Image 1 (cartoon, rainbow, N blue to C red):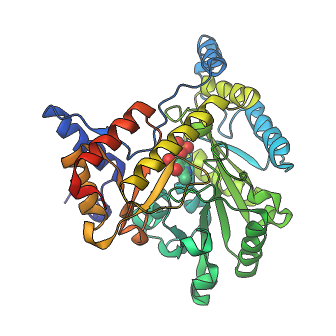
Image 2 (spheres, rainbow, N blue to C red):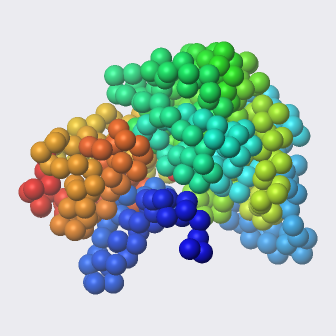
Length: 387
Ligand SMILES: Cc1ncc(COP(=O)(O)O)c(C=O)c1O
């Protein structure tokens, strides 16, 4: 065998798998509407594009970028935190620019978890949180998120022995896939637990700007978080810059420094014009029309899913419906498979997000409204898919 065991036990990346299946169908001349992946279809604001293009023309832009990120961008991120959450960050010690939050979230485990150490991951949760376990041999325990508890992690359900052993816990609000949001009280309690049991919290704030009810909060609004928590922000969803790979990790200086040690060994930094465009993005802010478009899609998709008989809580934030399937229509994999082949609509089977997704599907609304409407029509037409 020329390859490591882990490559044989590692399940294929769920979205690559769905993409592969869609491509195979397209090659046979079958068109598919993809409501599986979250890949915003709208463009970054004009100012962001212009900033990137003008920087790309400067000869110095093509050199290796500073590994911590450009000082100007780190200062902008700190300024964003001050304006948005009233949180003061030291751009030198508490902000690190990272090439995409998926990568940074996974690399963070190398910075704070020992080989075989325990990670607490939300179930359901964004698949990257389970990757340290799958890739680096770290141990993992799921922390359930349930509707009755507003999809907030129920720490009381984690065994004391696991809390004792845990070195890192991932949390994500506004949440993928449930659309839940967290308030400051929740962060306060969680920070207390982390300090009591001595583990790091990584808050993933990917959907800070995509909120329909309530507001996005930062764990760093809690003063004590500064010693145990870091937070990841990304330009992907707020600014439609997902292909550019730009994000930042902020918070506890000791943890940021440990992540920098890892990142500086494995990454070469982010291309300067992209960082320049990131500064512009934070300066001009997200496009309100994008949030409005999501609000409209959410309304129409939600109505359509309800007409199909699916049960769900309306997402307060993010770009997904986390819909429950009754037993009689089959499990998540079976249902998503039939939906793909019989209605030509791709969704993500809930199992991609953890064991609690065995009878759930995640339906994303990052595709244009016309495609969402067409997908609902195709879905309605296959009677065995209505529930
Ligand atoms: C919760 C969450 N975190 C992180 C990411 C990854 O974002 P990025 O493009 O910065 O890697 C996603 C992408 O869908 C996400 O849903």
